[in-house]
Image (tube, rainbow, N blue to C red; front, side, top):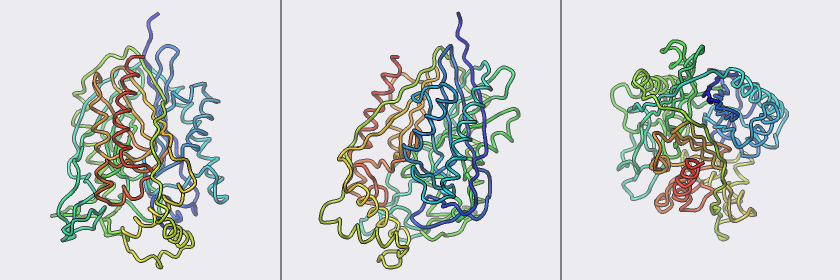
Length: 450
């Protein structure tokens, strides 16, 4: 009996109540308005008896315990095994905090609401399954993503050193500004577009809820192309954001310099979304159609070493962590991005002090024909995505951040020697990113042979 490849799509609103904690910075923010909707978006794939659910949720970061709970609930409702459920967080910095153990009633109520909506959208996508064919293409989105780590004139390395800082020598790293596009043409239903780009959704700032540029990408693609639905997967964005430190002409339109030296603005999130949507349209009509003779999935564990603090550094780490938690950041002798860095570094050391020496990373993969998706449970540097993309035998490989949980940054080894926010705050020892590249390629190799 011939197996028919099918694709389904669904989307639901997951806006939180006002007053909930907004996550994304090391400062207290309470939601006091909504600029645009947060959403959970699901794409379901079926071939024969095999089913896969791919989902994004507009949220900055949830621990793997929360994601595992969501998967368990989806499995209970749909029968799709947890290993075949791929949940990616878009990483918007204007979304609500969701913890394994809520800290107040607002968080507890929202967690219940979010769970019900996530389960619903998975079911709706499965109910929407229709025969489909698949095409792929790659566009480019220029001048909206920038390596955010810079070498300074004094020899130091700084993350987000500030717009027009005269001490900047140049960026450290190579940028991947490609937009990977997977198009599913469905019989009797809208075309489903998967758009993948790597960049921090931190354009907006403030206390108002927003999906940032991933939400704009979804809306602009659907507005520009009739009978189309879109899901936006964020990529390997750990060392990449939207801040152009040397703006010229109209680059600074709709932006302001925020508390941490980063330029932000809601209008700029709109601009980033438009450029990415434009890259989708560069290739939409000229995708290369590929056969889908099978769909596959896997969930494998990669173990890396924890980046624990040195014993001699722990007293100061505890002091800074206690001051921060008491709301007394003004007593910590740093400002702007350096204050964020030392606070995050202290919180990392305190959190890991009594934890095991190794950390388990759930790496999820999906194969739709000869197109592979690999989900990393944190924020890999751009080079991690480029490295994994070198795995042999695939027509396209799409890496995604904050998948199966959000466990922090995966900087490249040389970043630990250079310094900067990401390496100083990473929960993982130097070499973990390189290990992810190596084992990621091996996982994709095993998936191909299934």
